[in-house]
Image (spheres, rainbow, N blue to C red):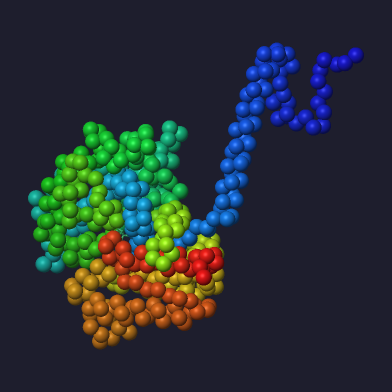
Length: 486
Ligand SMILES: Nc1nc2c(ncn2[C@@H]2O[C@H](COP(=O)(O)OP(=O)(O)OP(=O)(O)O)[C@@H](O)[C@H]2O)c(=O)[nH]1
Ligand SMILES: [Mg+2]
């Protein structure tokens, strides 16, 4: 007599059992089930076909051009990437205006906080026993009152930072604060005491989405103007607008300027400086211009891949290629993450901000920034894994270099070997260009073609032809390798 209990055979795993039709299925139910199964199978087949078509296409089609951006922190890597995006994918670049608005606002608030901290230190010095040099600027009652009126900016900074961090219902306060600490690299509890705090973002974080998700649900209609809820009373722009006059008064205050000079703080040359256009950035309906997006400072943590579809010009006709540009964090503690990307790159763009010759690394105050760039450059050009990789050197921040030299800061005071050469941009840049070229020649494992450009990557006009040349040069190399050129 057959048993009513189905025996489990060897090939009946739990999934087969779970998917087995019910034992008491009616004829109608069976018909419906078979119909649904047929549909599901057809769907699955078509996805499989699509995937294998894409795979075959990838094998036949051109490999994407891969470019790695390298250089110390604040050398201009992310700015170069933005410049590429502006030039070759302007629509996507401009669609992110609403997200960059928050970063510009954070940059403004940070600059103001640097000034407020300078005032606080002057007040503390005055109150303490420390003997004050007679010429030391005095913080008067008006300036103290101005400082007090700007205190709501602490809250604005917090709101902007919180928006930058993905938050969810499961996030405890502790977790949120830990993330804040990660963003700034500084424990949150200590942040009010720290002058040199920096806004940073982990490449894994979808920070742009976070900003836009606050106001947008329909990504299709994404447009900078529409992506901002202008009526939102908690928008940081409302407070910035209300405090605009006080911020301007602070920046233009003679005592403040004197204190900054005394402390050797050249804010105009610092990353993310917007105090020269406060009218614009604090206006009620402020949307960052292309220029403001390029100047906005957001430190990179980790490595991020950016895809750009480019159409080649010049000799190669109109062949479009996918480009993958890899942007890395340049802070010393993040450099070990670069190596895995060395084996597969068509080119490296190395940025050395030569204007930093009189500065030290934020993460290692004993190390001169130019010396760090030179060491890093030596390590990169001598790396065997990169022996056959095109390297393009950008001696960057030429605009700042020019104004620094013109203001009387002497290159020879920091680079002894510069000797008695004139302290002007032409002589200085040509000297440094030769030094970097010499290191490349001496240390490269084998001969390689080497390109060097003097750049100001915040200025799309000055980089336009450079980036276009690089694009053509890489495309030609790539096509030669792919045997597509005779
Ligand atoms: N004036 C001027 N500013 C520049 C130039 N290049 C970059 N900057 C500014 O310098 C700051 C730092 O540039 P980023 O591109 O963020 O530097 P990064 O190399 O990506 O730095 P990390 O992400 O920390 O590794 C930004 O505020 C830029 O706008 C330049 O040529 N001239
Ligand atoms: Mg960066």
